[in-house]
Amino acid sequence: MPRVDLMLAKEDCNQCPIRHRAVCATCDGPELDRLASMKSYRSWKAGETIVLEGDALPFVASIVTGCATLTRSMEDGRMQMVGLLLPSDFVGRPGRVAAPYEVVAVTDVTMCMFDRPAFEKMMSETPHVAHRLLEMSLDELDAARDWMLVLGRKTAREKVATLLSIVLRRASTAARPLRADLPLTREAMATYLGLTIETVSRQISALRKDGIIRLEGTRGVLCDDLSALLIEAGDDDDGDFLD
Amino acid sequence: MPRVDLMLAKEDCNQCPIRHRAVCATCDGPELDRLASMKSYRSWKAGETIVLEGDALPFVASIVTGCATLTRSMEDGRMQMVGLLLPSDFVGRPGRVAAPYEVVAVTDVTMCMFDRPAFEKMMSETPHVAHRLLEMSLDELDAARDWMLVLGRKTAREKVATLLSIVLRRASTAARPLRADLPLTREAMATYLGLTIETVSRQISALRKDGIIRLEGTRGVLCDDLSALLIEAGDDDDGDFLD
DNA sequence: CGGGGTATTGATAAGTATCAACGGCAGTGG
DNA sequence: CCACTGCCGTTGATACTTATCAATACCCCG
Image (cartoon, rainbow over all chains, first blue to last red; front, side, top):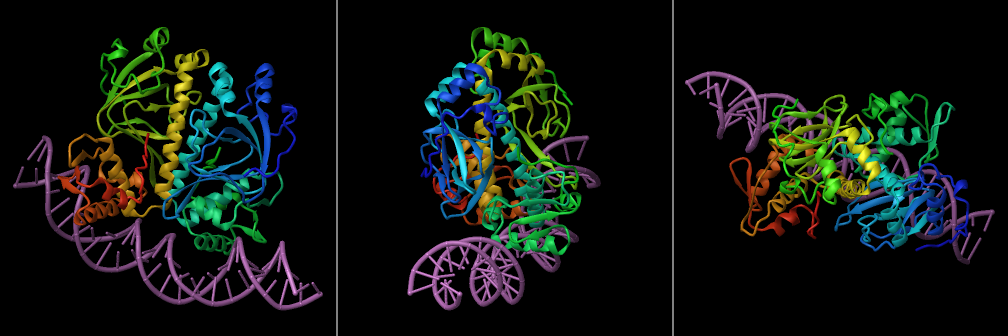
């Protein structure tokens, strides 16, 4: 599955774009050196499968750049995305080899991979990595539970508005109007939201017709009034889903 | 909110029914003593609210006996259960005081509560509690993601069959037919499944009419053929949702 | 016996999926 | 350079699923 091996293994962690947010965030000095000694970089092209559902995963890793999806599927082919992996997110479960999810690169993805046995040994010997991982796992748990509310109780319009508001907020700059490029296809959005492609498409069109958002091509989204979008999303407060 | 204070604080942890599964499972000797020194027991009656959404939580705790629900709600009152808490499950997040979820006792509940500052101090000083908590959090994360598939992709009939199969399997004994008492009301089931009460009721009736399950009163469920129920649930394999 | 909470069932409406056709765009190869 | 092909997205017509509204039954308890 790996396609491109970037020769970055010796890169300085201090130059790393996710240095302060990833699983290594609270490590320093010898701990960081030890992590660095077990790391290697690997990249995937958009669309490539990184891990198959049920496959053994000989590594754990951090997303350095790009975007990947975590999906779970039923025997008859129905799929549900259960997570969106972004830079600094962690992939793999220490102590368990089989992956219960499929991981697919949405954009080109580069990951910082850690040899599993070495990583697990380090976790048992030093506290910082385990602590950071616990913190990150609890964040992900909160995000997953927030998403359960979206899946279980929101209407199609609210679901789409919720996703757009997340993407817009994540891409937020000082510039108005807010603008973002959707990393996901309509199909991936549908898989995330528990909807069909057609319903996603219709709801996006409806939000555009209602003046809540504007589109640039098929991927660009503009929003002049985020609070209007949040109302459509069913969030009065500025509830932050995802991380 | 606490109603009954059981005088069990000095009870021997080795007699505890959740000793080998809770957050304290991997502790021993001095570590266990230290945990014991910060613990106290408290009980709630069925139906009582243990924690309000958004409230400060001055403790963290383990469920010792009983069953509680974790729910998240929208401003307009729509609610989604995001977790079902059973004996040995952990309540509260170290490092964060505000609870993003409402916790309600479904049956009478007894919890083993730990003073938050003492617990957090111990987590930072000894590795076992943090490790166990990470393990438990990752399990919960998997469970939450499994449930996302249920909420996002399953039909009403499949959702109800899924829940019944979980309850039946959890109560599993060697005896046939399988029998269990639902801990949840129809309303709680609906909140868990992302459905309405009426739909839950109809689907239960339909499964009964189709001979998949039998009922005893309103809470007792019998199943002669679990595999038939699993097929209705959309699970061919014996996929284990929850813990 | 009456009352409040809980569950069931029916009629209807609303929301979303399904099936189908079509448009746009990029890459490919003649 | 242009037709061809495939993928992605949009839109429409219709069917199906589930929610909503309403009535009634049930049951434990006072």
